[in-house]
Image (cartoon, rainbow, N blue to C red; front, top):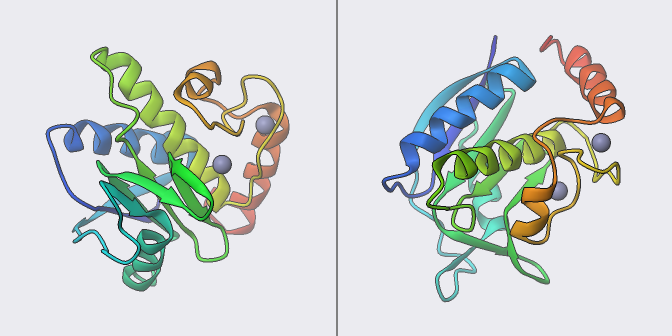
Length: 176
Ligand SMILES: [Zn+2]
Ligand SMILES: [Zn+2]
């Protein structure tokens, strides 16, 4: 299995759980091996009241991404925003093979629900990394989610069309 470099931008009591779910998603859905690269200092560029600029984290990931890694993924307990959006659950750059996911808004007293949300958002952003776009098929993990309600509404898996596109891309890259 090829490696996906995973970094944290800050750690808390949920980081272990998030890394476990991420490892599972990368292995089961993308045939990638999680290679933990360590905890990075959250970039202050663009930071505002309790929120980090998702683009700044992506930029940082691109800089530290090891050459042998197929992709770089950042995980953070901090809330994120991006240009024109009050908040984002995550952000990806297919061009640079990098993505970032925030679990700040995914937290729930129900551990199963929290872990499922984490799996969905990691799957979604990694889907973008491999060229998938937002998909209108009900339940597809590539549905655009602008609220927790929408995150909970969609499933954890790709619809057949997205799955086909992803497999084609993973084959092109020699990942499967
Ligand atoms: Zn998206
Ligand atoms: Zn789809």
